[in-house]
Each structure stands twice: as structure tokens, then as C-alpha cells.
Length: 133
Image (cartoon, rainbow, N blue to C red; front, side, top):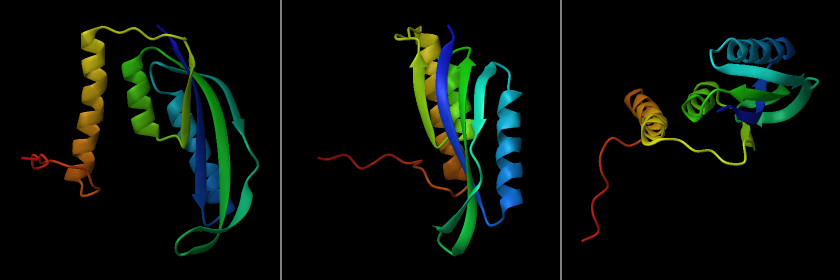
């Protein structure tokens, strides 16, 4: 089963060259990922921004929209986690059917990533919430 996605990526940096290079490199890495086929990609012009982030008075932003075809849902989850699009939308197929093994692997990818974030100090939860007794 091939899943079609529309993804939007945005890069923000203090200089114009940093935005352009980082976003192009990011999309190039994605295009080389096994199981991911980029069918369309459009880079918007780089624009100057005021106060894009706390502590940054002026910066530059660029957006890239891509349409991809990805082999299976587990790879979709992995791609979204690894490449962090700003926005993602499934464009097809209208229905996705998967067996229990594929569903479990997809869910486990999310769990593994949450544990990596928690272990690195970036947040997440490694303990259970107290029960409401």
C-alpha cells in the first residue's frame, strides 16, 4: 500500500544563507530515505521576519511544500518523527488497512521516540500517573 502525503516544512535562521542551505539539505536527506518518493517539491522565496523567536529580533524564513508517496504507515510515522514537518496531511488512499503487527510497530515507534526525548532531558514521561482512587 502506498500512502500519499502533503508536507510543509519551514526553516527559520538569523541569516538568509542559513535558511536556504538548511532547508535544502533537510529535504535532500528526506528524498534519499528508503521507502520515500518525493513527487513534487516547491520552495517559497526566503522572506525576512521580525521577532521570529524569543531573543532573535530579525530572521529569515523559507517554506517548502512536498508531495510524497511512502510505502507503508509505519514508514509514514517514522518519516514524520524523523523529519518533523510543520504540517502533514494524508492525501490518499481514502482508507488504510493494516494488520496488528504493522499497527503495533507504528505505535512502538512513537513510544521509542518519546523515551529518547525523555532520556535526553527534552521532556516526556517515564513514570505512570497516580491513579484516581
